[in-house]
Image (cartoon, rainbow, N blue to C red; front, top):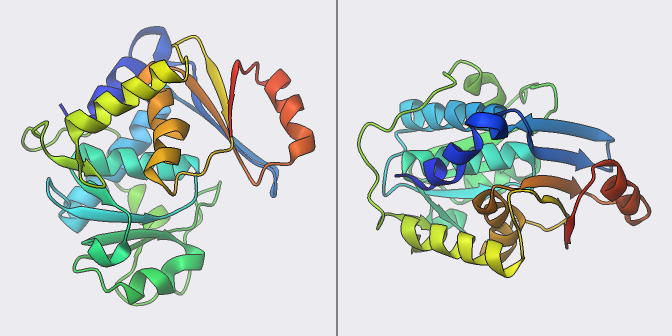
Length: 240
């Protein structure tokens, strides 16, 4: 079973499929996006189909993420792991780099063997105009792909998934952190953690998913508004 299937399968069946899985805020723009378990899985599947069919991402492919903690980043991470890719920290070590608009030059400077996929992170799905030749516009391309994904071959548990750790090790660590943080499937977690390190990603996303909890992530948080969000979103745990 892929890491994505292990994390998402329990969250896209029964009552869990319809309840909010990821609620994303950006206090700098006023953006609020809510994804159910089903919707999050659909986005991950679209991303996995794009990465496999257009980028040849498969088990053993190294992928770097120059992306902020964002609901689309969650979809991209889950899509990459569904293909069996390893998420690495350094763009220079990656076959493909996925980046936001501000870091396209940095991604290109790493000269990945596969190429670069750029995300606008626009709430309405707008693409990025004027991209350098060869750079794939995520927003434009991902909508052409299906909402279901089935790997062409099983992904072994010992396949590298995150910074050298295997699928089995990442899943065990995520479940362990969920226990350490006291997370359960009834929790709603308010987080401001960045995902730029394995530790931040582990606590801020993977542990929440492993627990079957619901995530409320706030980017560019306004400290004065966090208590109001905790009340209005009925969160039970705060991270960051």
